[in-house]
Image 1 (cartoon, helix red, strand yellow):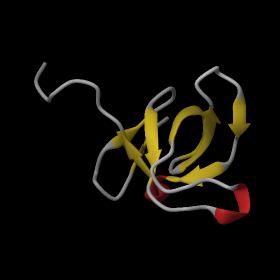
Image 2 (image 1 turned 120 degrees about the vertical axis):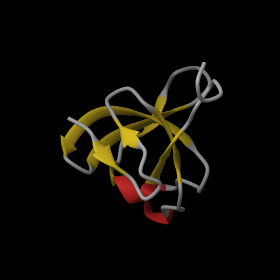
Image 3 (image 1 turned 180 degrees about the vertical axis):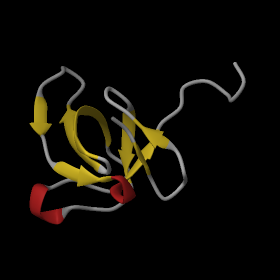
Image 4 (image 1 turned 60 degrees about the vertical axis):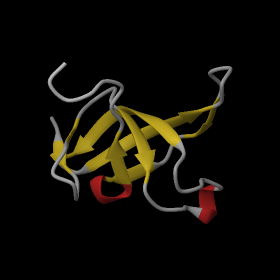
Length: 77
């Protein structure tokens, strides 16, 4: 199952995403990187945020408009 965010990019399981807004209640800042670990609905995702040692520090449920997919290669590669 996947969804479309505000930039019309498909979000899927295991995609690396960046948070597009701060979430003060969870101590997450805009720009933090996470990984989609479960697709809960067409535009609702469980996202894992972990430190550089792989230790999870947040596991919030987020909507597609709060996320942006991260790319590691240019388009067409």
